[in-house]
Image (tube, rainbow, N blue to C red; front, side, top):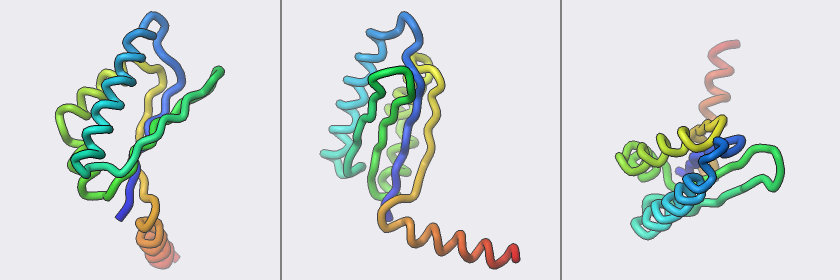
Length: 114
């Protein structure tokens, strides 16, 4: 089953711009290693050129992605990101072949409520 973790943030805390650049390099290194180790399939940055929000989308199979989310290295990257970026949020999402299973579960839940 496919899954994704999507990170969203608004901007860098003023004065932490150099830290944000280093965090991005460290995140790239972490994700490149995770791809090489078969823990994720891809990651993509979506950065706003103006005043808006930014995204990092990390995709992979559900089980390896679940395990990766609990590693000390990723927990530390998440903590650093929260200290460097304003309005940081992230969530875990079904995607790809997981959508059918998720929608099936949603349909069953709706039937139970009606």
